[in-house]
Amino acid sequence: MSEAIATGSDQQRTRRQQRAWTWYDWAASAFSTTVVTVFLGPYLTGIAETAAESGTSITLLGIAPVTAASYFPYIVSLSVALQVCVMPIVGALADVVRSRTVVMGVCAYIGALAVMGMWFLAGEAYQLGGVLFIVANIAFGAAIVVYNSFLPELAPAAERDALSSRAWAMGYAGGVILLVANLVLYLGHEGFGISEGDAVRLSLASAGLWWAVFTIIPLRGLRSRPAHPVDGNIVRSGVRQLVRTARELPRYPQALLFLLAFLLYNDGIQTVIALAATFAVVELGLATTDVITAVVLVQVVGIAGALLLGRLAVRIGAKRVVLWSLLVWSTILAAAYALPAGNSLAFYALAAGIGFVLGGSQALSRSLFAQLVPRDREAEYFSLYEVSGSASAVLGPLLFALTLQFAGSYRLAIVFLVVFFIAGGVLLARVNVARGMADVEAAPA
Image: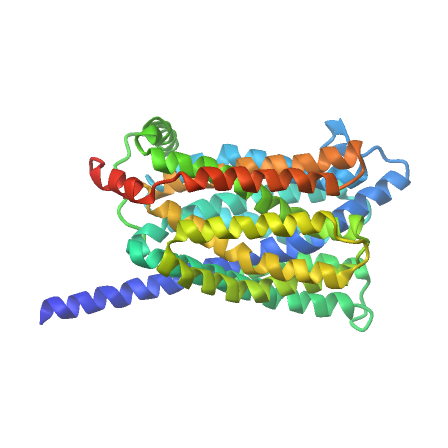
């Protein structure tokens, strides 16, 4: 009887931690939707164009001259490149410090404060906007590394697809609620007695506040397992563990193959997320209200898509569902290449398609990788997962920036993104999940 009670108590504790864990997707999604996808790109581009019109030479953080239109894509690429340097160290640290939640919280609040600082992006302060976005995006990636590392210990293998998908659905729900509120503010800014620019800056700052407030729930609800013994300085121990992880990765060839596949197909996903709004406004000539409506549509459809694809993965496997989603992604991007300018209905249709596959492809990629990593070292391996995703996200925005600067068109880059999806799918098809799980089970404790 006592054993049954203890087991029931453990299950209740695990369920509470699972619910607390999913709330971080709700919290951090505000940065992805309101800041990255909708408002910051067009607004920062507009500030840079204003500065250029006044005779200011537009530079990338004072280092290299760029065009106003290419400034934001270059900033995205730079921020992701710096993410690649920071995330492995944070992941290794999270496995040796006393509390992973502290590491996650520090990273999350650095990012949230940087986003709240975007309220000050007025006039020609495009360089301040670039710096704040770089800080926020690095912190966002670092916090996600630690957040993802909780997944393997919160659910057994059979439940991870469903839990990861529920968390993505929570993220969509949180993102769309704040975005709708900001849409009301943006469209009705005159009635609120503020300018359009003030409405944008308030929307950006609100994303930081949302991120900060709702991060409290997972920080209070998650419990870290005991840390690995630390020999000397924590930072040095984290770096040593990171080096050991890199050396040991070839022992898990299926995990390594998956990371290579993820690096390729995630390039397309992250580029679409980061630059869809700028593509719609600059290339298609759509209004900001059209972009916000499309993003809201992505979030709403994404809730259903993440949950449905999560259930489908239980039946046919996460790998197969991700492969099918990559085929859909390729079809969507091929259609986007030929999308007529000014046609908001066609853009909405593509947004709905993206919403359906976006959450599922990312949530199931996360849970699929969780099957392939050794236990008690999840944070350091998930740092490699995030590095793989972030390293790919350098290429897409950089391609867009170069295309804009030298060819003046977004559409040419779309063709190359399709190649990334196809190449990533070919590698993913070669991943043997059962063999990868067997490698993990056979690994020394």
